[in-house]
Image 1 (tube, rainbow over the protein chains, first blue to last red):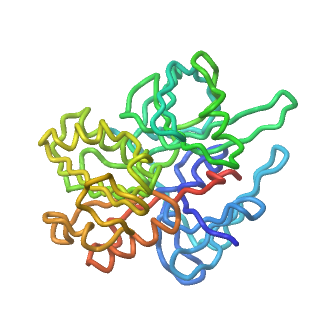
Image 2 (image 1 turned 135 degrees about the horizontal axis):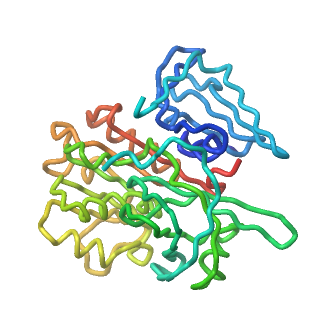
Amino acid sequence: MTTHLDGNVLAGTFGEVFAVDITTAVGQCASCGTREAIGQAMVYTDAPGLVARCGSCGEVVLRVTRSAGRTWVDMRGVSYLELQTPGQ
Amino acid sequence: MARAAVLGRLTWQVGMVTDIRKETATASTIMIDVPGWPGHAAGQHVDVRLTAEDGYSAQRSYSIASAPGRDRLELTVQRLEDGEVSPYLTDVLMVGYPLELRGPIGGWFVWDTGAGRPVLLVAGGSGVVPLMSMIRARAEIGSRTPFRLVYSVRSPETVLYAAELAERGQAGDGLEVSYVYTRSAPPGAQVRVGRLNPVVLAAPGWTREAAPAVFICGPTGFVEAAASLLVKAGHDPGVIKTERFGPSGGQA
């Protein structure tokens, strides 16, 4: 029985390693091409790590796993990320 | 207000509990002084980390309830029966205790105070917490932006901020508060008990023509039902922002 949350829960984990806010980043799903704010992706938290799926087609867009002082980020499901970088 | 999310990596900070207020039988608001806290944008959350003497640690996300402000913040925590973190926060934590946290986190589920368009807030249970921060932020800056809170609760006893919402809703400055009772309504109230429905969402002035910005927060099932009702009623999915919460609270 798994239920999903959303991309808002990715913010803390990404914030540990990246200075940009991942939730306002717009990602293009590599599978269906939908552009969506990562904050609105479906995120499953009961897998090892966090798994974000496209809100449109359900394919995996991002995975992030932490263990023993390391963080793995798997981004093969996004063809690009458009990040907000204010002040630049 | 300027975006509170300044570019920089998140780091843990230690705050000090200055007050604890019981909101309901199972929820408390914790007031925390955090030296150097930069303030937040209404809707953001923090991560709280508890560490046992043997080094075991557990971490959960909690929405910030207070209006943005420097050096202090308030969290409202709903006690989960089988929770690992919330029972400590609601039952054990006392004034004067330190609390480790980091934030503010998340720039997506945030009310842009300068946006001007009406704001429809839809809360399921303790999903009201980040929405309360938006309501308080609005009051703090003296905004007259029309706001409407539709707040779904099991019963009157589970309402968070009941007195404050009643007062703010009667102030006549453009905030409306409506309740949906899913299990039991207040005695004598002329309201039907039941789930969130299209009628309560489509109050006069709050249909799709008003084009409000929409923030929905609650458990996943509630959020999806509410978003789906609003999209069916013609609201633009692009203006609907959602935040789902669950027992794991974003633990990775």
